[in-house]
Image 1 (tube, one colour):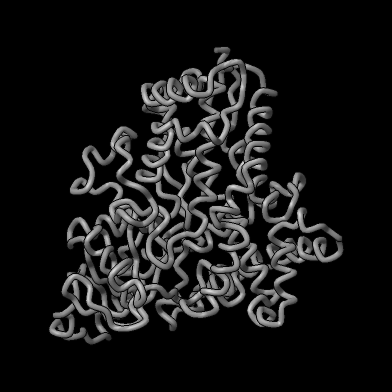
Image 2: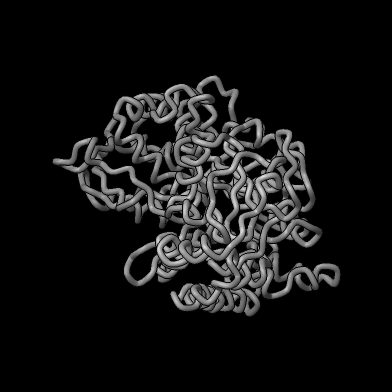
Length: 503
């Protein structure tokens, strides 16, 4: 997801382009013949040179959804010099994520990914090919496979217990900043699994680095779309800001790796960093796992692993507090299975809680962590819905728009977990109406990792406490606005009242 930066006056770059560029380009540029677009999907009106850039607001998924409502679920944009295909329907998504997935599986190299991730040396933004497959295989096998996710059960239970204890320490009927609690929980699990320990003194640093990544990866850098305006990125300080965050990540990860290289650990104590260091010594993998690649992979794990869980839990709690009847229904089920007496909900009990799973699915439907799936790039010409889409076209799949499409969902804007109670719809990429983790070759490999933590944490939160809005705050006043970023979280802190349940 991307959005246009703002200049010092607070005006978006889109506004700057409209005000300063369009009068010039309208006079000085020649329009391309309409006949050259005959084999392309419908396109909104565009300006010469800048194309449709001026139509993108800070919430790009909403801007594209609005354009799709007028021009159809498959539309062709020109973002500067970059041809772009926007997919907002399950049928079109089936073509690009399943039928022609092998053609549509690459990524574009952009200013931010080249700097922040050492030339796209990570897994999420790496171009499609053998190196990407090797990196994904390493991360899946040694960190994210179902077997590995199951092996983290004790860590999950310990961190959920620590989260409940932190809430208890504030006393009953206390107003709590759950944003801070949920971030700490998600980050602690990730840090223990990846590095073998928590970073008690560095939570603030992690929070700033992860939040900054989300903002930086969501920006439009004009040089990527209009090379002749690349100097604007430097003038506005955007490039310097990316370099600064890269340096801070580099310093942190260099320290983490150095600590692991200097310590002696048994096989039972090895964490993901230990595994990467040991694999680096393999002559076959030495050229693949360079120091830059290891740090880029770790940055993926810390940022995506923490933010996906934290943001989803925050949205789920916000929706439940706003919908007391749904909260009560979930609590009744969880408490009937787990019982009372202050005990913890165990992972083996979660399979008896279908409404819990429905609540999480409904949260993903309304609030997918990455509403506009990470952009892809076509490796070759590709037929999509009868149109011929050219090689190098950038591809946006709007998961947010499909999750709220009235043609796919009844009452699409309402929080109704009951729609998932039959269990037929999942989020593993099989049902293309509902793809919060993506689909095809580029589906997020951390799906099982995230869901395991989400289910256990939410079950224990609603089991142990009754949750209410702060005194004097009505349901209508409880904001559900979004903050622009790669991963879209709720605006403002999630301040709620927790009352201990003594059942």
